[in-house]
Image (cartoon, rainbow, N blue to C red):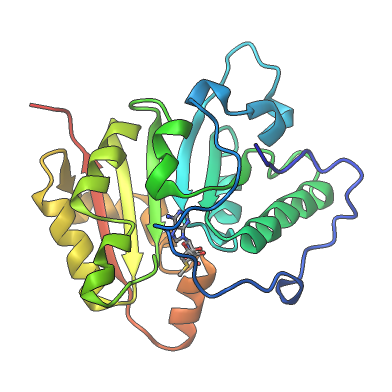
Length: 245
Ligand SMILES: C[S@@+](CC[C@H](N)C(=O)[O-])C[C@H]1O[C@@H](n2cnc3c(N)ncnc32)[C@H](O)[C@@H]1O
């Protein structure tokens, strides 16, 4: 599986977006060609997180940023949870390459830091169970996903009733799903899907206020910053995975 390596020998110079021009969108329903692990135990952790492996405790990935784009959230979360392994899943190859380079540069320029984040090119709508065991994840992020406005394209949306079954499978009971968008209609759609799902409940205002990660949703990613610059509004949905009754 493609991965960010340990940064040894890297110049530490951050990549520039203009050298990673990518198509604006990729169709998540079409077939792409990239390697996919057959099962979560085939994920090459040592390649992604070389400083953590080999390890006696065999830590697992606990946070997943779905559609991570240019990786801003991972970079912000990394120092806040230095012992937690996190991965970004990104469909576009050039964007994934950019994030890999960004992580390598950060590791090289800041020895001992950013060793807990990595990225993989994959289609999270198709291959999530290939990466994560049941209940493995503590947090999943869906920040500023593509809105797919036309009704015939709603099935391309990364949050839907049937995909929430998979996210509920990968999340541990008590784990948190964070979604954010600047598109009001998509915000309502995501909240409605989550509200109707028997394995999720909305976090209370008190829970959201006490969660330092919730505050990052409107500022950490490249899309969030664009929305903020343009004076747009962000709609958040923060839900807890509840145990089966
Ligand atoms: C609008 S961008 C938001 C990126 C980032 N979350 C942010 O807030 O800056 C949506 C990203 O999701 C990626 N994406 C769309 N469908 C995906 C899928 N099925 N699996 C993985 N990534 C996907 C796109 O390639 C794109 O980079």
